[in-house]
Image 1 (cartoon, rainbow, N blue to C red):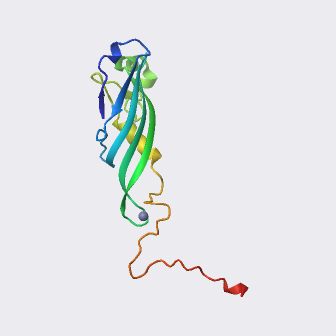
Image 2 (cartoon, rainbow, N blue to C red; image 1 turned 45 degrees about the vertical axis):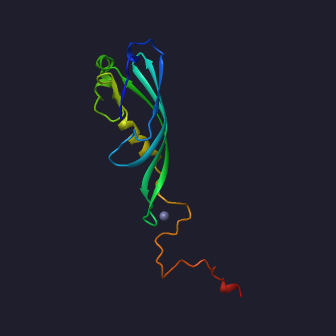
Image 3 (cartoon, rainbow, N blue to C red; image 1 turned 90 degrees about the vertical axis):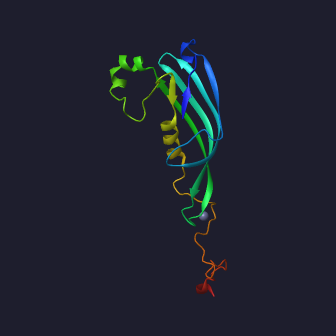
Length: 156
Ligand SMILES: [Zn+2]
């Protein structure tokens, strides 16, 4: 997701802008994002732009137990600095890491948030994907899981 910075970089340090996320604005190859909503705050800082986001995503996922598709809700809260390219140039310790996934920079007066979103989704995705906590797994129609309690015969 590319975000135009408009005149933010020409504004005074500390200037803020808010972007409201559209429901179909966030697209990632690895995830089937059905809808998104939330806000992105952009703040002009000396180093570039500080972007904080609070976004709710609905992602079509496959349940690990029953293998049915369901809607997984994910909250992402990111907090990233997008550096001015010339700021990076003056800071060799940052410039050396320019290709690493945690260094973001401003390009053509735009910031690219996709990688930040991708990392955040991966962190916030539950390890086990379940359509609901009580999912019984794949239940064969002719072999339903019995709810009958087993009787403890040793104590009889
Ligand atoms: Zn399930």
